[in-house]
Image 1 (cartoon, one colour):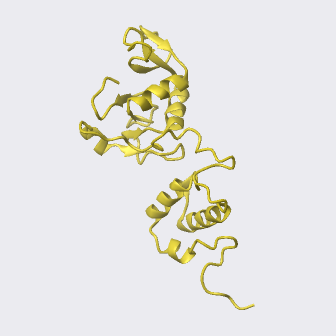
Image 2 (spheres, rainbow, N blue to C red):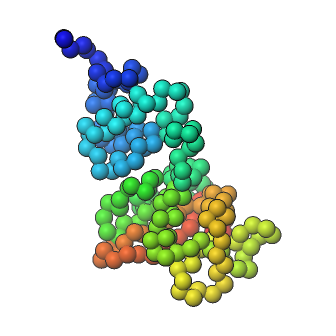
Image 3 (tube, helix red, strand yellow):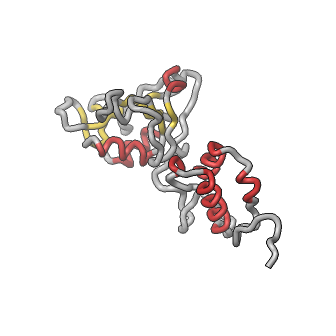
Length: 203
């Protein structure tokens, strides 16, 4: 049978592989993230094209390609999908931090300053270090949590553990960014983090 021109991927009439292959790898990774494809940081161009083509083909219900089979939004991403929140008082340190928008993304180098709003990224980071969500007692605002912290079990005074739901509800309500390190420059695990509000509210 003679080959036919155009898209040869079954069940993907709306996707032009030629168009996908004409894009840069960074653009394909961005498209893959928006489509809810995980593990893109380690994919080569051909793998990204194949993944995007197959995802578009399976999304025939007209729903969002970033949703799972039940129609729910991606679990753990948060309202901003991991993207940095900006405002009139956004700090200069954000410009020098690598934005992380999924648990699969890796730091560009040891000791790299990172920033995210992705719930699962933050939760994994804390739990890998034995941290539990907490608030500083005495800083509450009526029935709202006060200053957000993590309890790493090092006998820090005035910390009260809370649920992840409470912690993230406050984190999102205050439009905070989570600035952190995975490792120090010597390669050892880091527990450095900072919560920053681009509108300079108390974190």
